[in-house]
Length: 359
Image (cartoon, rainbow, N blue to C red; front, side, top):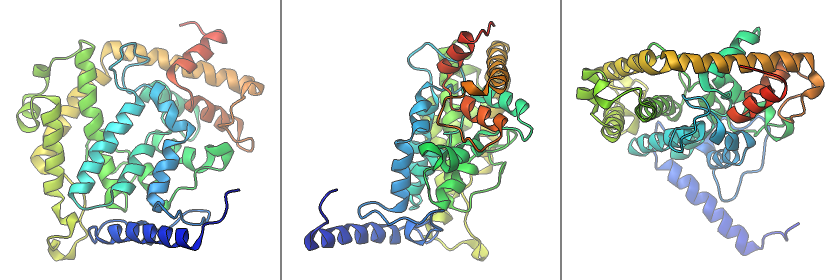
């Protein structure tokens, strides 16, 4: 063990901690501050050089589930090109966009970043095709946001979980949304403005990089996008993101605390009506021409077949479950689902083929 800190070191660490809290106190009155949060499920001594939200961010980055995101599909199944988006690059883009919005609104960047980095930890191999397949197989269904929460609460660190703060866990659970509207609540609205930012940043990131991937794959050209989306949001990747970010900052300005909210209302993170309408039109276009494109559906059908095959095999052969990413006390089908959800695309394909799967 290292020697205990000297009195001088203690004073210096106390100064670091005080400075961190002073920076949070200078944020918007609507920001979530780590020292005033709801804490962790298991109490821990605070870090002398990091706030609780900074500590959560670091735990997520060092987790096994985070490392596996680099080999998990975003849209295109097991792509061979070097520049196609993966769950990891999507996560980093979401974090960058979310932090920019949080900083502009004088909200807590550390909380925003931690939620962003953890929001997709529970995603299956093969993207939403894998998620849909596990949803068909489990009686209670399967949703990647709920699995992300399960990863950080119950599966990481040999079943101990990461013991994250309540605010980060809530933001991870509530980042997901319904298909029909970019502002839809889905699993409810996060109680922190930082969590609300991540929900919108997630959509901004995936819409724009999925357009890039579709163009790279030869499915689309920029000029194929809806006219209103191009006129309102911009005619290229960077202008679109810039328009969306600036619109959220302007529409959500009350979150800074610089202006009094009308009628004392609690501010929310939002988009203006014209930008939201153009974004929803763009989202509908992407579903019709990319996410549900015939060729993509063929890939998705193969992905679902792989997941079904693996699920049925492991239920019949539970002795083959060798991962420490399952909990022995859980029902077998839950353990199998956790094991498959943790797989990367290529691992799932290799595992299925080694067990006799033929597409």
